[in-house]
Image 1 (cartoon, rainbow, N blue to C red):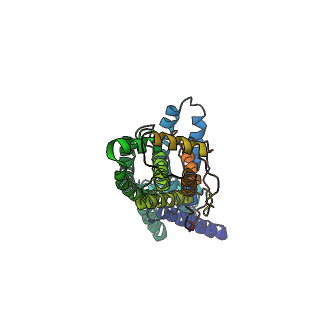
Image 2: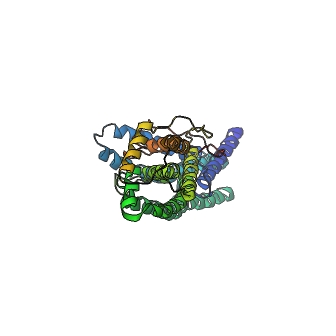
Image 3: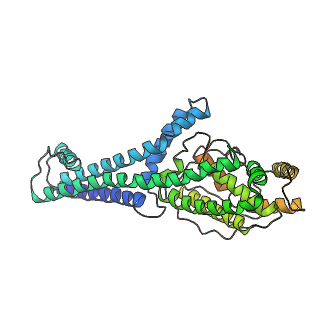
Length: 366
């Protein structure tokens, strides 16, 4: 019996320690390091939401359902932490001093929620109650302090997404962006846009891998999405670099920042992709779609390079670096339909439970 109680105490201590490390790695560690426990909560909640969405008849209804997915999951996470901490301390209390499981559970619950309705006796039990009460308050305070940082990042993300509608329409597209800049601003102003979105890509890579739930927070309007906006900007920058007569190094750095960000987010969610694609690997955008865009822009006087075939090869060489992550993330977050991204028909990607370390990709082929 003594050996069983010792084993229970050790098991409880391991459970409490693992839960605490899960909280630290999920919300304190400033890098993308999701844990099995946090991923399990989100995957289980997503399964329930998917079951509910099967009864939906329209995208708008599914969007309203999915808008609750990330907030509810975030609220469930600390509850699960408290359950594991309470269960772990129950094992420790029973192993140290309590004669029955119920008394150990009562001591643990009273200490965890600082109720004080179950007086503890003995120095070891008193010390345990102090540590459990402090840990319970710390876990709740951690979530509360985490939310302002996350919503601040959300606001920064959505500002650029909203402004993009003015420049690229809704849903955003390369054709709309190039047409509006040609007629209103002048294509020379595109460099300012590429610079703004290069910073935006750096921001979302940091925020969406540090706070994984950020990827699932939906835009205030159902027809907007951060991932379709990212795809439109990347395609426009790839087209500008490959097809416009005036060379734009800023467009190229924007594309590089974009595919690095999307690959980092894909790595965080365990999405597989080719990290070193060949320049002639197939992409989801067809040559016919590229030619339609080319003809439409040529018709309004956009200065294009004389060699269309070379421009297509260059565009495909840029697109291949972010094609797979873009489509997979769009499916993962259930983005609204937009040209050349969420309309490609990629099926839902189920993230892995285990954390995958970020890979170091080779330079792209462009």
